[in-house]
Amino acid sequence: MGKRRGKVEDNGKRILILGGSGFLGNAIYKELCNFFDTYGTYFTARRSFEDNKQFFKYDMQEDDVYELLENIRPQVIISALRGNFPAQVQAHQHINEYLIQNECMLYFLSSANVFDAYSKYPSYENDKTLSESIYGRLKIKIENMLLRLPKEKTGILRVPMVFGNGSPRIREIKNHILNNEPVEVFPNLILNVTNDDKLTQQIHYLINRNKTGIFHLGSRDLVHHEEFIKDVVDKIGSFTPIYKRVFTTNEDRYLAVLPKDNKLPKNLQFSYQDIIDHHILS
Image (tube, rainbow, N blue to C red; front, side, top):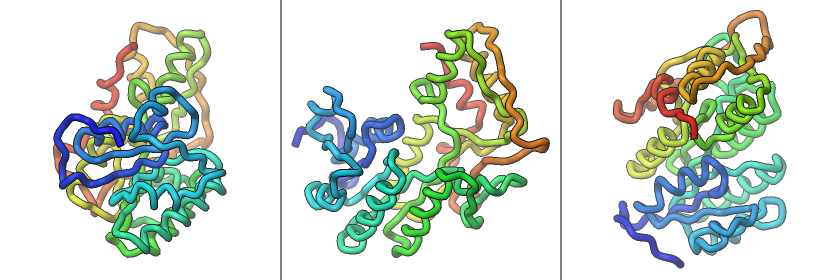
């Protein structure tokens, strides 16, 4: 396997990022690869991944993840998988089997959508999950599978809307602005947010400290979606975009995950304004 320069923490703990070529998976890889013995998977062939000896091709619908795990023997698995929902469920069933039989633990990237049926309040770590969306129900199904494992085997990381200069959401907004197309905003939606930089720093901390349990990894404060997007657009550059205001209800609704029991250190907490300030035109 290829060697990288840089110091290695925790005696070269071996980490495998499933979905390592996606936006979040690759951001996590870049954060960790100089500190740990880090591997990733990719699905769509790109020269940068094919040439990187730390990356393995993995087709969730064709390949058995158990064989991949047996080959790499990670101490930590990070699941940032996307794609076919039944294939995701099956992959995590096989990951479960591997976790039971080996000295290994899993960090699973979940979503605020596990609470999207609750619209009146923000949600905390030990609140009951309930979702009206297919995506939210998928995340709940995998979470429930993991919650049956011994506590020291899993970290469930619930993430709100993710922004960041290279994020799909920001790329889409920039494209709409440049093509003079309307940018959708949800005036009644109250949420918290994160970006790739903040999230990957938090995950790095959790791995370093061997933290397990349920973590809500978003800004410590809340903001209306419309206000947030308009502030981000102002930060990106001097534009006068067209906004399409979408009302899904007549009342404010929440889609926010806040920490109560598992708070991170102050230096890893941030505000939604910190996320806004990060955006520039590139």
